[in-house]
Amino acid sequence: MKLKKNLTHILTIISFFYFFPCFVFAETTSESNPINDRKRIHTYVSTFMYSKPKFNILYGITNNLYLGISLRNGEKSNTSENLNQSSNNSVDYFQNNKTRFNDLFTIKTQYFFFGNFYSNLELGLLTGYKEENKKFKIYLNNSEVLPYSKTTTSSDKYLFSIGLGFRKEFFEYILLGTEINYGILSASKINNHYTFIPQYYNGLPSDYIFDQLYNDKSDYGTRKFFNISIYAGIAI
Image (spheres, rainbow, N blue to C red):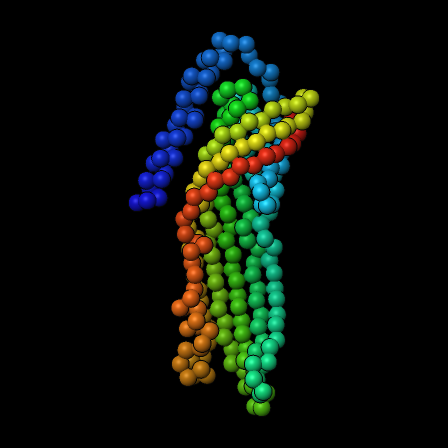
């Protein structure tokens, strides 16, 4: 219900930033001196604080309406291994594998409603991941191996944002601008799968019990976000 209420507020704001400018500012612009024609293709790289840069490319359907996409590389896949001696007669071998994640893809619409000021609407996808944690307890005196594994899958997340920006063409081909966005990032569905042999542990492994007690899923819920970015690029 809370998410539905937030979406209702956002749709109301969208109706102001898109429909109102289309019918009001378009008429005032036509009555005043027309602005310089913009180039059809705008490509630029934007950044926000310490986040990775995002590549954007937009095409001008009209002089004021642009449609395009944004792409941002996520985190690379990684594999790690570790061997620890847990007692005098046993060692623990750990292996961790995590797939690539947090790749961002968005479809965006921009409408220049007053000079070089524009409204921005984005719908996007943030990729999830799969992580495998394996542990093998190896007893040296009898060569017995106790396997334990945990596989975590996180679903893709969807985002929806609206914002305002300013972009201007300098020397005909150079783009400089800034943008403010507010949006919602959907929750991610988390699934944990455990594999072990209860007889080896005389019940449940300590790793499994600890994980059930202290597993933190606060990072996977629906959240709001706000960012301010600056960018530079080329107009063609």
